[in-house]
Length: 321
Ligand SMILES: [Zn+2]
Image (cartoon, rainbow, N blue to C red; front, side):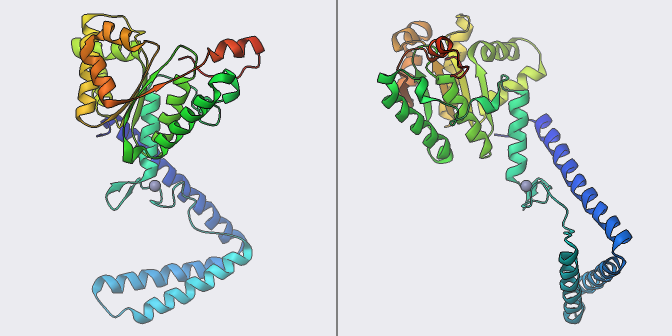
């Protein structure tokens, strides 16, 4: 998707601050050399001068062989002396690939995409504790013993889905009662996918539909930007479908959203406590047939893990849904 303007601008600002900080750090080392190692400082000046003469000659199309050799010899000499005093004059960039420029060969660097995705999460997704909902924190021991084998397979498949996201790009429908870990697993997927450079939005159905409705009926540029992002992000996670107020508007919007994203082959993960019959009753048969026809349906098994967690009082567990 095209990243919203505000997201791109914010990320570019943060990346350029990183680059500036890296150079300030390097300059502090240069000052230190100036004060404590005057011989090395003198050599550094010679290297700079040699590099300048070389690039100048190169620019004018003159013979540069000797100048290049001299610059290289001096540089090797400087590197050896720096190593001796244990200093590295490379600015400590956060991203060595693009040296904190945010772009490589005119394209966004992975670091820039990750940053924009983080900003999308902070600005557009519903808030959630990101380190709490990972694959590692999904605790199979909290599942009912009889359901553990199938839940183990669901966990592995979710990991595989996140790792192969760019290639498979399928949409998933997570079915099952409240508290079986549907939200936890979809958030773990969302984060993994966002980390690999894809824009991802996570939203509970009531909030999502509320904001989409404002975009449609009120002249609200922020809601409109949200609407565009929801319809075009690489992965959309809709949590707790069916918890929103059921109106003609939400019925139509859910159908439009599912359809539009399928037509663009954009992946969506939908969590719901509703049974297929309830989906059909609430959103019409058209929605159910779209979901069953084009989504991979995953049935979560077991009893509510949060009840077990509460009884044990051990503070671990899965987020709702
Ligand atoms: Zn980078």
